[in-house]
Length: 285
Image 1 (cartoon, rainbow, N blue to C red):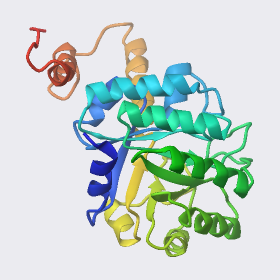
Image 2 (tube, rainbow, N blue to C red):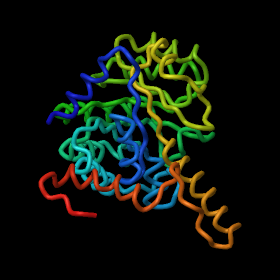
Image 3 (cartoon, rainbow, N blue to C red):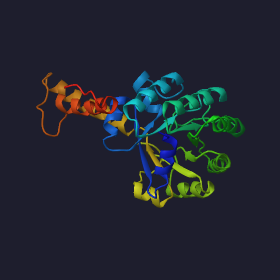
Image 4 (tube, rainbow, N blue to C red):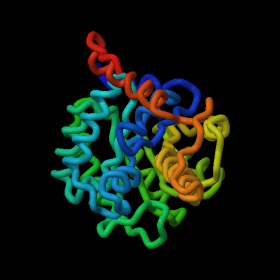
C-alpha cells in the first residue's frame, strides 16, 4: 500500500482534511473511530512517553518504533509524523525520514527550530538560519522515495514568515506549515505567498491562532488542519475530573450509565484492533 500516494489523493479533495493528534496507540484507537487521518505530534509524544515537555528529549528510534506500532494497528489510516528539527543534523533527518517511510508513514513535518528547542507556541523560540534549514530539507527530499514532506517554520515576524515560506515553496516540499498564525489575514498572506503548494494549519487549544471551523479553513485555502493536542488535553481533563470525583466520593466508583465507559466499552474498542491485526483469529474477550 502506497500511503503517501493515498494521502496526496485524499488531500486533493476540495474540503480541508483534518488530522487528529494521537499520543499512544490507545488514543489512536479512539481517534480512528472519528477520523481517517492521524498526526504524531512531538508535544503529545514527549508528554505520553517521557512525561516531559517537547524541548528536545525525544529519541528518534522511539518515534520510529511508535509509528511501526501505529501502522500495524491501523493499516489504512493516513499518518503524518512530526520529526521536529530532524533530530539534530541533516544525516539523522534523512535516516529518520527513510525509516518512517519504510514503516508506513504517509508523511513527515520538518521544522526550522534551533536547539535548545521550545514548543512552537512558547515565546523565545529560535530558528535555524534559512540556508541551514534548506540544506536539511533538500537532503530529505532527495533521499525519499515517495514520502509526503511538510516544511514548517516557527518564524514570528511577518517579513521573515513570507521570506521563509516563499523559499520553502521553491523546493520540492509538498506542503508548508507556519506555527502560530494569528489571524485570517495572515493565513491569506501565506496562502498567496506559497502559490500552488499545499497549506497546513495547526489548531492548538490555548494557542495564538484563531479557532476556525473546517468550512472557514476551506474558504481560506487551507488544505490540511492538524489537531496535535486535542486528544492529549481531553485525556488530561477527563482524568482530572474522574480522579477528583473519586477522591470526593471516598474511593467509591460512580455508577455506570449508558454514557460512561466501563470494562465492556473499553474491551469492545480494543477488540477492533485485534480484528485488524489478526482477522482470522479473534479470541473471545
